[in-house]
Length: 357
Image (tube, rainbow, N blue to C red; front, side, top):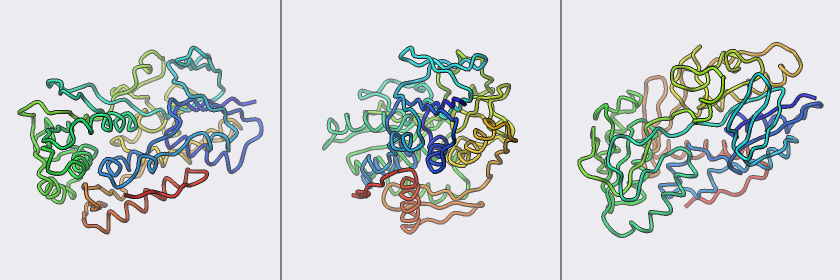
């Protein structure tokens, strides 16, 4: 019996479960450990904040996928992995042995920048459900009065969230996008910058190196940091602190531990962290888990260098980028909407009707 432990329910693991559900493998005992009963698709988070979707529209319930694959679902957190012994420890104290382990547990938000604490606190974009819960808790307290919001980090995630908040709160909100690199949108694809600058101007969002006042609340979109429990393990990590993996998606120095998504660092093909990689790693991970269990050759993962980027700009409007070109308009929001809905339906065992506002 091969004991497969899946740590986290990121989209690489959801793809593994989806494929195992289509064709179960005899002799494979599967356990999935995740802290949340549903996985949020971060690509739809700005649309939820802007009011275009309900929260449920961006969620994939984990239990149906696990049940269909014959996996035991444990709602808990892994706090330690012993690669040599083949054992994981959970926050509850339970220990689980494994023959093969795969980690797709995401990353944590970076600590607060060196700035005064806002009255309503810091809202980290990761994890998405915690961010939404905090936003929904404070929004009624700010309704109907002028408010100041700061979004730290002018990458794509920060820009999309600033625009979504501007659409949601309208003229009541004065929003500042803060980035220590200045007002160049350096972290955004070059071709998209003119259209994105125009969207920020249209929504009266200021771009600054620092805030001149203390906002009512601040959003952290400054990137990711590895979860603290990784530092307690002997698993090899890169300079950035994330698990260092090879082309077959195994953690370097480990024969039976894989890692994918934000928690993994691809030294063999460096790329910025983006959800598209976790999604594309899923089929290779599925193949390699089964190949390792059967002592067959593993496949190499080759990350793409170009893909279609669709950047939401608050209202039902988006910027499309690919191969150094950019176009913008309502048609690209509808394209993004169709692709995002289709992506979520792929993993829902019983797709509910979307409720678009």
